Length: 86
Picture (cartoon, rainbow, N blue to C red):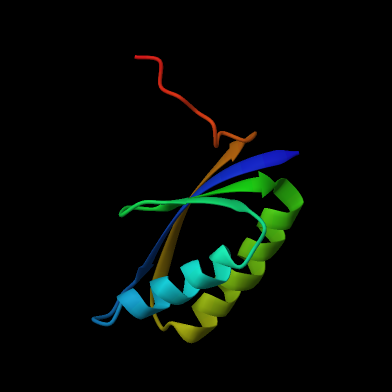
């Protein structure tokens, strides 16, 4: 099954940029299709593979950051090629 995920990470301290960069760098090293923008990162790929990666890497981020928030939107299917029809 394919999955589309919208991820936002919010480390709650002054030096918030470095943990975000580390998380995105690890994400870029995967085989997932990734779309980055200033507000969030979208990930597209196999459900099981994405969820396994997120479980491991969000857990690691929580261990490394005293206070950190992740916001995830999970959408069944691959929405990478979405074109608005407005």
